[in-house]
Length: 421
Image (cartoon, rainbow, N blue to C red):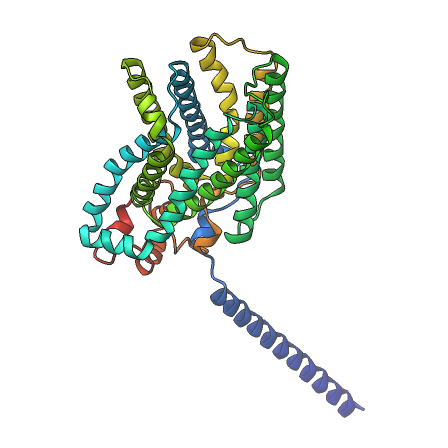
């Protein structure tokens, strides 16, 4: 009897030993599996930087305030160009293609020589040979967007043209979703819709006060609407393309190439369509001053827009432009003696609220982290306001990623990847 008890005890001890051994083996195997998974899916430097700190975490960053303020500066600059165009019209001066041509000339004078300095003349020629066709398409869309929008106002009402300009936002969102892999959060969609609602109030107040302008007495409104739709489509293509280019190339290269080819395309277009207007135009000191103001404001707009594309997106860029009407009235009160309708402040506040909602639930890098550049933005450029620059500066270990992938610029400019704008 005692022997059987001993056997049972021994067997029980053996079972406990086997169970504990098996448990230890499972723990060891689990630890190895966890280590293997950790090695297969390591924490990325970009994920360490791009953390979500509450729904309002992005509002606490300096990038948020720079983005919103920069968007409004661009809206004011664009409104200023419209003001100078109106002043030129009051002087009976209207040469739309030539008017924009001066902007491309100025940008080309600034950025093309600097690009040659950075890359060398042979490097610049290689750039033109290799990527020139891409910039020709970008410049063509930009030139035609400007041309058709200006042309549209000669045939349709301002109300119709402004409503159709919403199409640019749709084009940007669809193109970014389909071709750039951008996925929009529900708060971003809600913010865009609220901004559009605010713009609707602005347009409605213009309609009530009869300040929409335009001549539809000859039944040409449909023609003008089609021109506005075409111009908005070109703007959407340009904004999306420029956002892609400035995320992978230095700003000076993008602006230099776009202005170089834009100057050629716009110059040819002005020579074809504006010859008669040019010879019959009235020239004096006022016209020269207004042209200078228009060119400087538009050039400032072109210089700052790429920075907003890097900080945010082409979608937010177009949303920011919705406040142009409000700033236009503010300027018009002093220059053209406009009267502010009571709906204007409400509309402006609504658009700003929509922009704030747009950035709800955003992580710290927000839209600066472009999905087409890779997890750590390894295919991007280390430039001003880029997510890659912030990642590299925040986590020095991530600097290795930009050593392996440059900006896809000429090989003989090795320092451009670090210091390019």
